[in-house]
Length: 366
Image (cartoon, rainbow, N blue to C red; front, side, top):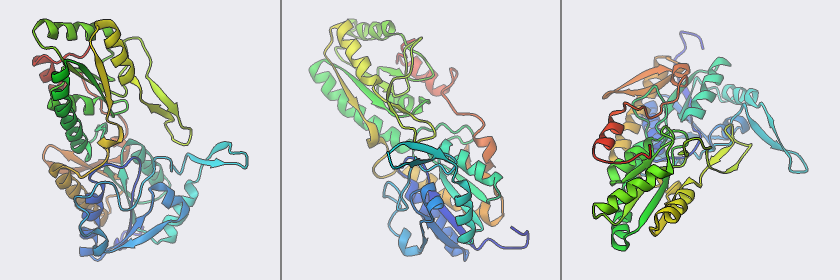
């Protein structure tokens, strides 16, 4: 883009898994853009729409009343990476192709001055590659997993933690009534933030996360210690990426259409079975799954998402491309996308939240 040319036309897409707050960002971007005379092109179904040429212009009417609605009015996909594009032949055999040139062609065909990509780690990697191909891109960090190092918090995480804590509240009463152990499996992939924060907020007695490989003997010991103190039930919050010391991730399948083909899931069932077999305690398992992605965003996520969306337009208007919106303390800042994806944010041993959980007696199986 020539230095003298104003930003008058932007595209916006939501990539990866959906989560509460996406519509709030779309609203924040669209309202701010239209107020500054900028046309907004909503690209449908994430990067699939960018490759296949699916888009529509957004108006104020399109974003009216969507602040509190979960999901995304534009649609999303976690299988539409332009650089890892699955194509099935006549026999149904899938092969992977690079369709990034098609994405760039549509960007220019729509006469876009900037693309605002909303998504998590995978989306930001794609945005960085598209930046290197000459596209003007601004990133907005979204993931319930909260695993982007460059921002203190990603929108969607608070809403997911709320779902986990509310589920644990309800399971607490039934576990107590029937004197059972209840295992709750939550999302998060390779990061334990949902399990840690949700477990702490929901009063879990044991929290198993990917960053701390656990010993089953330590898990049994914690449950037996609670029994000896007169507590005849326990709540165990297990991240889907948690694994036994010396063991491997538990997978429910693989999907080569995705850049990361591993589909995590099933650790909760294994933990529950082993607890029942080795402690004699009646044990049940609840897998929260996609309930953590759905529903209305919390007030915190609505505010954060709106701030992110409005700030993304400021970056676009100032032509600060190749950058991602980020929360630093209480302020919205920006960082280079390439820096944002350089390191995954995982739970550290000295994390204050982790240390607090240990101080109040929560076990981590180590």
